[in-house]
Amino acid sequence: MLKSLFKPFSSRLSYHSIRTKLLVCFLIVTIIPLLSVGALSYYQSAKTIDSQFGKYGENAVAQLQQQMNGYLTRMSQTAATIYSYLLDPARSGLGDSVPSTYRDILDKNNFEYFLKALRTEKNAGIYIIGRSGYYYGENNLDVTKLERIPAWRAIPDNPAGDYWLGFYPQNHELKDPEEDEETLTVLGLAEAITSPYGALRGSMILIEENAEDLLRMFELFENDTQAHLTIADSQGRIIYETAVEYEARDSDIVWHKDIEANDWTIEARLPAKLFYRSSGLIRSNTVIAAVASTLLAFALAYLFSSRFTARIRRLKDSMQKVSFGMLHTRTKVEAKDELGSLDVSFNNMVGGIESLIREVETNERQKKEAELRAFHYQINPHLLFNTLNSIQWKARLQGAEDIRQMLYHLTMVLEGNLNISQELVPLGRELRIIEHFLKIQEVRYGAVFRYEQECDETLKKYLIPRMTLQPLFENIFFHGFEDGKGTIRLTVEDEGTLLRLELTDNGAGIPPDKLHKLLLPSERRKGRGGLGVRNADQKIKLHFGLQYGLTVKSSSGEGTTIVIKWPKKEENADGHGDGND
Image 1 (spheres, rainbow, N blue to C red):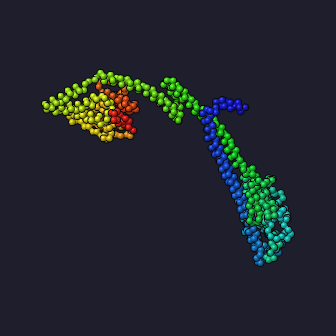
Image 2 (cartoon, rainbow, N blue to C red):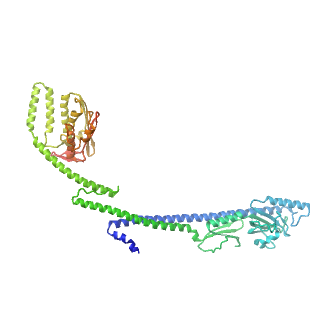
Image 3 (spheres, helix red, strand yellow):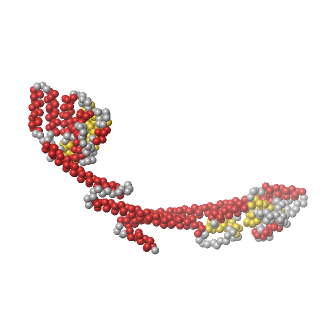
């Protein structure tokens, strides 16, 4: 039966599979702490509950002891007060027969007033009973019925000392036999008057206390704790016992207290099974919870491992397809966990491979086009420079200083731009060409624009593609400024392994529709605007990677900001750039 039940699981699980290993690992990691916590919780809870229940029972028995001791002490004190009253020589007129003189009647009335003064709410009767049967107290006692009290019958003929009568029904009153009244249960004390001095020698003092509240406390204790309660005197006579029969065992939990007033003992016995019932329930619930949690952990671990391995298999299949050249393959990303990150990385890797292949194709095509353009537009720089120098010398002889200055700066700009032997040049060289370019614009427009430059000398050694900055400045004067008026600010900052160049002008700005298409390589140029910015962006990407390039921010009428980021490279001794981390 069990074999057929677990056959579907066993067919899917192999000792060498990662699913089995994950399942076993999850179960070990889950069940061991679960069982440990369950066992520890049971032990601590059971220990706490058993301790609290034991203390509760002990405190309850101690409370019964205090109540009993209060009752008995109060009765003893009442009896002692009466005894002291009778020892007074002035009470010698009290006798154990009906008073015959006026003096005897006064003594009797005074004595009964005294007895009434001793009555309390708990007191059910105070009597002094003489040997002749005559008694003092309320006129509701039938002396002949006292023999119904077992402990009263056990008092010897020559009594001496105290006799605790225990609990008994107060059925010795004078009443009509036809009256059906509920009988009151009382606690009785009889004390013999044996002093040779004073009155009523040989008489008995009978004190009865209402024991209903005390018995209710016993009943509440028995119902609450399910314990068997026993009260016995010093001779072992049972004063009170729970009505249900009980067989004492050595394993019973016993709460024992002594009553100081009369050497009685209170003993409560509870079977060990009942005492540990609460902890047993905790144990049963803990076992059930542990079994249920184990089954739940197994089910969750199985489902999780199945889902986990399924995602790994899917990723493996996708890798195999890519190995066959299917670069359009992508794996589904189901979650934002480690496997999800692996799926994303795989998709990014395949996408990167595709982009790299396209980039290599684009670079090769651009290199060929550049070679063709360079070959097509090849000129003789010596002829150009000699011609410009001749014109410059002639302008100097004729006193045309502005023309000479313009030709000088133009020569310096062309000298830097026409040197195509080196694609990466130091940033300082590119900035010097910009200064010559700005001198030309100053001769052209006059001193109507302002140029601010902030670049640390240590940063000027790093390389930048040739002719990157000049097209950007040309764009500013051609599109941004009217009649050359405005402010240009260039800053270069060190950002660890990168350089950040920011070029800002306060010119006319770029309209949003043109700004959106400015750096798109597939966008065809209409008119003269934007080609220099796009070429500069392509140069940065071609030499340093697609993650670098230009960022352009502009608003119509508020100017333009161009940010360039590229990695640090320094020129080697052979004239080529090298990475500098």
